[in-house]
Amino acid sequence: MAEDALIETAERRSRQRFVAKWRGDYCFWALIDGERKPLVDLSLEGFAVPAGSPPRSDECIAFVLQRANVPDEIRGQARVVNYLSAPDGGQVGCVFEHLDGDGQARLEDWLTAHVLMNATVPISEKEAALIVSGPSLI
Image (cartoon, rainbow, N blue to C red; front, side, top):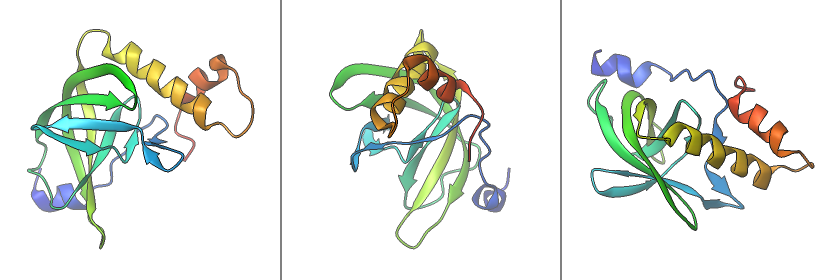
């Protein structure tokens, strides 16, 4: 993939993306190359992180996902699929290539808890899990 194509191609995740903040504070991060970056969004398919410049096209990166106030982490590999530039800083979109061990199940649990914490109307855990595993609502 040419670098120009990477910059112009919008990432297309089919699952719902969740803003990685709770009450205005970041609640999910990725450790990439030893640097802890706050996530812009997170889904069952991937994540986005802030970036000042475009990465190498179609690069595969190792990461460790972390969440606020929980010692749990998820390790894996993700492929860079796009870079969106903006005047105040860009962002890199990544899709999961591989999640280690039970990472997929833990990610589902993390996102279900996140939906429950951010819900503005009462919902059940089952309803939250359906939102997490369902199609993108955007």
